[in-house]
Image (cartoon, rainbow, N blue to C red; front, top):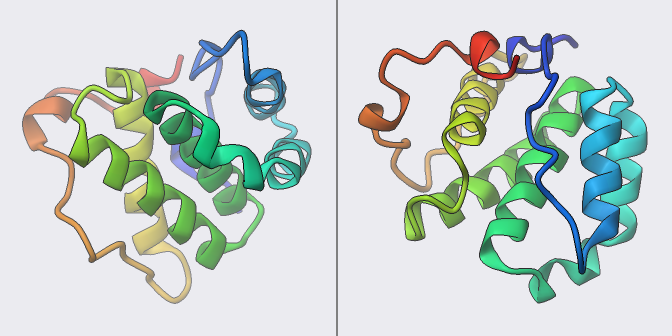
Length: 140
């Protein structure tokens, strides 16, 4: 499945360094269109997520959720995009503006996927954060 939030992903994230090199590897894989590899790298480190900073946790959830969405796993995408969304809502600014646009686009795409899963357990991201943003353009 091709989602609009990942059609043009150059420069989506690539802000990770230091203590979680696997997150940087997964982000590079994602940006290069290697979604399965990104998902596998992150899946191998799922047990490490709790030890990451909230910002890195949100990035993990975003990349894993978008990767799973592209790979056709709406339940997995629902789990991880919802995880990233909860972190962003709890501490606004955890994700940068482009990442918030990607998250909102991924959640919208998830709602349109077969089965129409929606992440209804928390409110949507504030519209002011996304004003004037187009998901595809934000990822270039």
